[in-house]
Length: 460
Image (cartoon, rainbow, N blue to C red; front, side):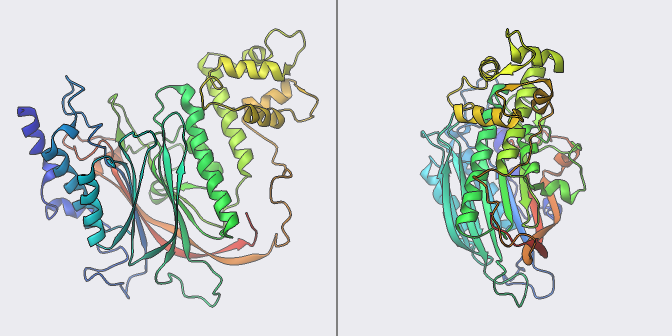
């Protein structure tokens, strides 16, 4: 019990009116002023916070006894979560996306909903499937946005993961214009991907992102929303070195934190999480895609990302390019790979043995991308498409190639990244402070300013 008392006295539970407030640069620069009204002086901005708040059912209080969880001690989980809400209300972001929200505890749920609701937020919660206990909560401030639509995406996969999609519209137009057709709307996604317990789960994580992007693409097409910005928020459980990061970049998304700090894809200067293994890594992102981004067809990006995972598994087996080709062609006498050889190799690489690994149709699609000449086998040059993760960007009959508006430009609404911070601030330098116990994740907040964009007028 001595250990628990010292935990309760942690400085993170101090009142928010402390000197720590000086480290919150967005207070007073977000959309509303201290009076709660829109400022007529400073430019309008949108702020977004994403935070994995560490569900009490997962928070370990005793490293010597892993079964001692915070959920068993009401005083501790309630105090910590009251403190989290204090910070969220102090920052007053326009959009709040939380992960590992303890949906299974009615008292905690009511506390969040009541306090956020009293401060002007509409809240939306979503539990993970199979009664996992935690889930997602997204809060939208009513002074800034009205929620036009809310959708829930259940992956029903190995990790029982879920995602939320919110379609919101600015209450007061950010940009005054003569074109009433210019949509001042945003699509927001909140999610928490599967933790990569094993490298063979990379394909499951890629599936989760693929499902989100497919759902987004369908929603935008059905609602004629090709000219709106998209924000993807959450705990992606993967760093900038991973396949998910590269997949999202190939689809036109940028990391708001990296843009704000002028970091490249190869810069790894910040962290946002200390996992249960004690490793620190940067896994929390607010992704932004503006409507003027030119992107590859989603099927092409998916195939290239899948090829990247295949190559990674081959290299993990210590195979170089030539050895990998020999492995894939197996025992056939020709200098080529058959479809049967290809499928057998993927099974050996543990990419098809999982209940939610590559499906038969996905293997077929990957094969079609690699078999350029369509002769039913892969020669060495075609194998290089897998090794170098490239696909031909032809448009098939399922894509929207018939677009009479191609080449016509139109004004659209988007965002520029103004700033982004991680708290505690030490994580911005790649350091995890030992006296931080609010969560095992840092809180990420980004500030965006609206901009006018010229886009090609085409439908998704």
